[in-house]
Image 1 (cartoon, rainbow, N blue to C red):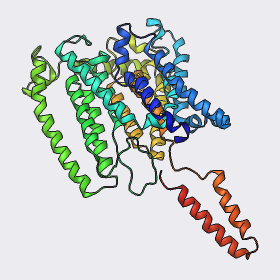
Image 2: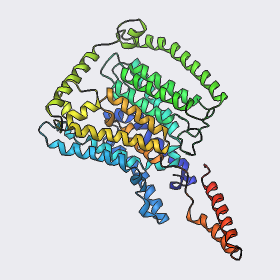
Image 3: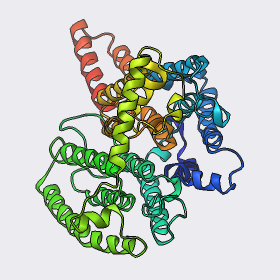
Length: 463
């Protein structure tokens, strides 16, 4: 991956990465779009912001006279990208059905196509090492911005959200904000590496044996966001992230007594912070309205505000619609005409595009997870795990630009691995053989084997 940049331009790419990615990771692009402060739509702007990364990769291969290798990262990720392409193609084909939803200028018809383009282009971002190594900074900054927008929404109810007793932040939807926060947090955390693994891929450039404090800070920040949104589905997604972190970092990674001590201290401080801040947060929320989930929970009252019943009714309605058209569904975007959206992406895919649409989405998730598993990319594995869990409670995972961008970035970044010896590295071997051409054949073979082993061991050392 490091072959795609020059050290002198590292700071420039880091700065551009912050400008290009943080507004989308924090969902500030939606708020700016609603205020009319963007030059174009957020999706179009997202595509435009990836163009410098595409141009940089192409220019590198032109300069190196390796233009035929330009598409190699996309070919290496063919399985998930093809699954996504099939999902987008199917949504376009089935938009010809009578039940397809063409209102809102066809936004929901072309949604999958936009998503595929964003993910495919974002692969180029993952080839830029300065940007990839800065993902922890981008993640933390984005979470701070999301948290700040939520806090402002708490102090000034209705600024971003139409629901007065639930802050939503920039996105305008509390559940949307909660799930995005978990996605963004998942790429800023160091999940460690398997014991004895020679994979050198790890997103945060930290020492996995001791440095757990930045990870706990990100997790605490993410939990604070979940608490402010009062999203039950967000809490489930966050729980899957937290459990994955504990299992992968402390039970399936190289460990030490010092790291375990840090874990105990950080865990104790995290528990103290949560217990101490929840009552304060509840009082701030209650200042404007006591009828909210967090206040009811802390006062031992019923948490459900009636939304569970409407969602259950939406599930039953979705099942009825699936039984009417199980194979091809009712048409792309048809779920927008339902009295209550399914709040489940699997059901929504089945309602809109039938079992074929569901299979395409499941293939996208499974192929992405297997690729990340094979490459030892734990951040990618957890990202897909969160998406899989989140899709049970949310119908707009594929609407979320942060998830689409992060998926593309991790598909590109996970290609980093032990480098193979380049052609010039075979020259010392030829010199050794020619220098001792008068020696016996067995001696030449022994020297050649020894030289080859030395070169291979040197090439496989992690950088």
